[in-house]
Each structure stands twice: as C-alpha cells, then as structure tokens.
Image (cartoon, rainbow, N blue to C red):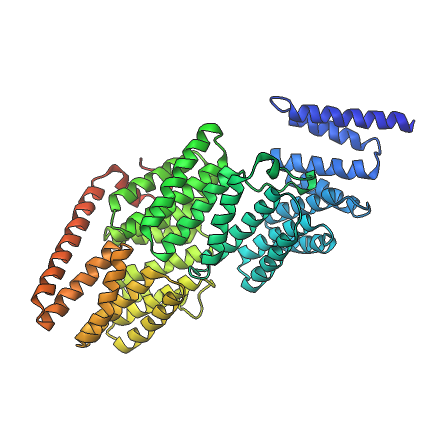
Length: 537
C-alpha cells in the first residue's frame, strides 16, 4: 500500500512539472496535481516542498494571496522539523515575508526574517540573502543605524563566501546597489564614491566571467538577482543618480544615453517589465538634467515619453505618478508658470507616500510662494520645511531646507538670519559635494552681501559660484550670478569685466528666452494642466 501511494504522488509530481513547463504553461492543472499530492500523506520533505511550490505558483500567477500565504506558512512550519532542509525552509521564509510586506504586513515580516536569519547562520548563502531582504525592509523604514549594521554584516559574509566566482560577484553587486542607493537617497554624494567605484568594478568583473563561472554549485545557492545585461543598466542608473546629485550633468547625460541604448537592445530580445521601470527612472533623471541645463523644450519632450510609457500600464502609473507630477511642477517653475507649478506640487503631495518626495515637493512649493510674495501660504507650510523637524533623514534635503529658510530671510530683509541659514546650507552641501546646492547658496549669500553694501564679500561669494555653475552647467544659476557680477564690476570700476558679465548675462537670457518660446509652443506643453484622467497627448 505504501509503495502504491509513493507511485501515486510521484506520478502527480511529474505530471505537475509537465503542466508547468509545457508551452503555454497550464498553471491551473499544475496546482491541481500538487494539491492532489497532499491527499496521499507524502513524507514530510515532499509535503513541505509541495506546499512551497503551490505557494510560489499562487503568488506568481493568481491574486489569491491568503491561500498562497497559508501554503508558504505550512512549508515553513513543516521544514522546521526536518534536518538539513535549508533550501525549502529559508525559501518559504523569504517568500512569506515578501507576501507580508507587499500587503502591508511589515510588522509580521521582520520577526519572521529575524528568526530565519538566526537559523541560517551555518548556511552563508541563505544567511546573507535573508540579511539583504531584511535590509531592504529597514531601508524603506529609513532606520539608518540598522541599515548600516545589516549591510556591514552582509559585506563580511560575502567576503567569507566560497562559492563560484559568479555567485560571489552577484552577491557583491546586490550588496553594493543597496549600499549606494541608501547613501544617494540620503544625499550622501561624497560618502557614496568608494561604494560606487566598487560597484562599477564588480559589474565589469561579472561581464568578463564565463557562463560556467556564473553557474551555482547547487540549486539552493542560485542567487542571480538580475541577468548581467540588466545589471549593467542598473549600474548606469545609479551612476546617473550620483552624477545628478553631484552636479555633473554631462556625465549624467553620457550614462543615460548608454543605458537607454542598452535597454533598446534588450527590449528587442525580451521586452521584460523591469526594462520599462529602468527606462522610466532614467527618463525621470534626464528630465531634471535638461531643466538644470536650461533645456526646457527637451525636458517636456522627455516627460511626454514618460507619459506614453505609463499610458497603458496601470501598475507603473501608480508607482510613478507622484514623480511625474514633480517633473511637471519643476518644468512649470522653470517656465515661470507658478499656477501650474502649485497645481502639480499639490497633486504630488496628494498622491505620494514617500517622505523624500513629499519633502522635496514642499520645499519647492515654498520657493514658488516666496517668488510670488505669498507670505501667508509660505507660513502655512513652514512646519513641513523646518530643517529640525523634516520627516526625512536625507542630508541633501536638510541642506536644501536651510537654503529655503535663507531665501525666505532674504525676501523678508532679515539678512543676518539669511547669512546664518545659508552658511549652514553651504557647510552641509560642501561636506557631501552637493555642487549645485553649494553654487545656489554662494549666489544667494553674494546677493545678501550686495544688498548690505559689502561688494567685496559679495564678489568673494559670487565668483566661485559662477565657476561652479559653469562647470555643472546650470544656466539659471549662471544668469543669476552674471546679473550680480555686472553690478559688482560696475561698482569696482572694472569696465572690461563689467562688459564681459553684461554680454554673458545677455547670452544666457537669450538662450533661455528662445528655449522658453520653443517649449511653450510644443503640444507636449499642455501636460502642465493635467492632474488626472487621460494624458492630453
């Protein structure tokens, strides 16, 4: 009788695998076969693995989250009593934690992962992988000290890992991407440089490995986070993020062009969803790059491309909607359209749950109110942009909040307060190589000194600001700095430099004016009034 039962469930397992691998796959029949296996009281190992398989299939191909969770939970509990069954035990824990987290159960996911990490100490691969997964959860919660501790622990484990070279490099890349992204999201541009260099080196190592080196020594150790071609695009993306924050627009453009070219090649072979996500993030960054460089017409064209990518993809639209509102708002600011900018920033605030994006929107909305002399509206969001109470630990956003406070002090003629805020902004920006913010702070400090009648000190601020703005290049900052410099040189009686500054100011203003006219006449410009429903394309 026992042998007969063995034959039944083994046949059902084989049939399930056949349904799963046929073209097209028959997932319903596959799950039915696996459920039938459980009716024959199979051995504990077979029972646990079958629950895991059903849970994974339900997660991947259905919306029946509760049933998937039940099966994964049973796989986890059954495997706890089976010695040497690491692959099922820890995969069940990992997948179950993902389900909890995706459905708002982060509170259940963390203790589950913590327990799995404790049990996996003798299995370096799974120990490392579970630590990474926990780090991602904590990363989203912005618990800085916990993230640093976990990533440091994971880094040590990777160094101890003795698997195949390809597996070790994939683990390194995953570790470094988390580390670099965390630093960049915190505005730590200088601190991230060593990690970014290691990441760029590691991706070069992966591209040079043979297919044999990339194979895992066992199925349970098969950690291929992304194919190496997609990893290359991802590394380009974080390099773009770094270049943007550091104020190297030329580098950002170069990396973006390479990444988008690689994406088009990959989409021609296999148009995977992740390629659309990477393409969207690259386009979002290049829009900001164009706006910094004064290319508003090109920026709105790129925003239009983003809209086309989101148009028929509801999932991506939900993920990127707030960011789209931000891009349209910043574009509107550059077009001196305060009404549209306010509309879009408020739309971003309504649709975003992200603290960094929410803070960014409020800081820029504050600038809009200051430029329009709307002191009451500025006061209404004052608590949201106070450097001491920002809902984020981002170094860059805190530095920017000091700048906005300095700008407010300038507009209200509180020049001593302005100098104090701007020196703090300057100190923070310099400490992490936030070159654009450094340049902004220097120009505004120069403007304050000019207002106070201290021409020499004003020149000491604005001259290096102009050099930095030219290096970025930031056309709006160059326009602002050249306007102050021509006044300063006139006061100094330096006719040659006054003429040069006057000519520079004229050239910058003409370039911006011509681009403004071009952008305003494009069909895509109508997007500034969109907040919901179909895109006006």
